[in-house]
Length: 189
Image (cartoon, rainbow, N blue to C red; front, side):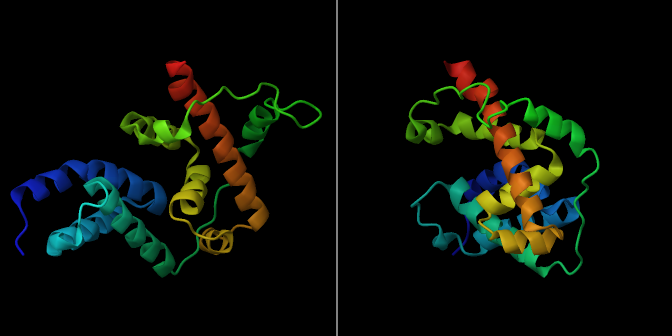
C-alpha cells in the first residue's frame, strides 16, 4: 500500500521531537537519529498498521519506544553515570524537607489529573521540564517511567546500584514536581 504525501509531511513534522526524545535516552545523536529513522521507515513501510485507535504521534512514539529499548539492550559496553557534583543537588533537596522528614511546603493542588493529561500543552511543559533535569536523572526517569524498564535492567545498562537508581528516580520526581508546579500548575492557578 503506497503512503500518502500527507503521512510523509506529518512524520517529518514530528521528527525534531522524536529525535529529542531518543537523544535523551540514548545520549548519542547518531544512535538517536538512527532510531528515529528506523521508526519512520517502519511506519512508512506498513502504513495500514496505523488504525487510528490513538493519535499518529502516540503510535509513532510507541514504535520509537521499542526501537530505543532494542538499542539499549543491544549495547555491549557499560557506561558509568557521573556522580561528581551531587553535593549541591543534595543540599537543594534537603532544603525541601523539615527535620521530621515531611515536606516544608505542601504541593499545590494540581486539579483534575485526567483533564490535565489530555491537554497537549501539558506535555510540552513536561518535555521542557525533563530537558532541565540533570542528564543522569532524566535518563533513569525515562527508562523507568516511559520505557517501563525494570530497575534491575536499568542498573545493568547504566552500571549503577539499585540504591543509586532509586535516589536518581526520587530526585527526578522531585525536580519534575517543582518544575511543573512553577511552569504549569502555578501558571494556571
